[in-house]
Length: 309
Ligand code: ZN
Image (cartoon, rainbow, N blue to C red; front, side, top):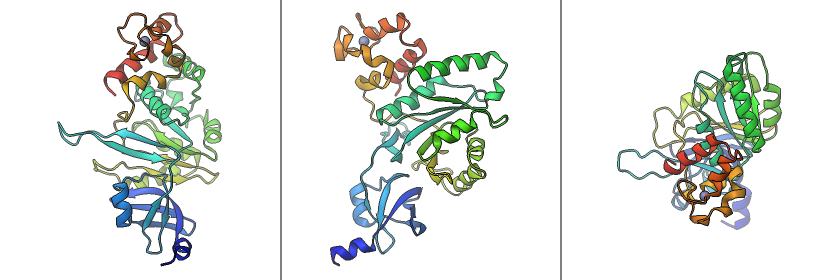
């Protein structure tokens, strides 16, 4: 087969879903289910992700993976005690990571938010924080606390949207923030992602639920993630199968770097790069916490992630 013929027979596409060793690929001529060629399976170890750009050969097989601009991975849970954990690719070629939390029911877990933010920082992908069900907190002390913490995150450079699908607040800003971008939504079940997606585009949340009902149930080695294009431009990737979000490839020594407010202090510790910013004397990070320059809650998150990544 000549080179010219190979190229003309190829079709470019984006992986929108993983299905047990094969992949749904969205191409200019429609969606199709494609296995990998034996060669690509050997070379890639089968590790392709939702959002990957690929080429499909004339036989309908994925024969090449195009270079990734970025990607998000998590540390997979060990399948049994003593087994090794490994990298689990969640999605590739993202414009933003969108951690979604409920203002109440379940109670907001700021520490988990810091875990998502560190993951986004280490992948060099911007983050947009979305708080749902804000109506449940309105008029209660929780609302003040959430407003205050949201202001702290905004000061760090992370936009925070307070939304309610009940009274519609924050939804216009949410729609504008997702417009034309590829967004990875992360968050525990029950935080109201389906309602949020339905508010973004009628029926979108239901489409996500329907695709997730077909795939992703009861699997331990596969991450259920689905890419859905938005009518207004852009796409969302939902990740309902992810219950734990262990940090992958974040070295303990690098962790503080992924807290933007700690960066200016890191070269001022007495022990320099060897400082773990825990018990060491002359630690500039701890000094900044005491001086009120770094939130004690964020510092606690740092320590927690340092010992339980
Ligand atoms: Zn230090």
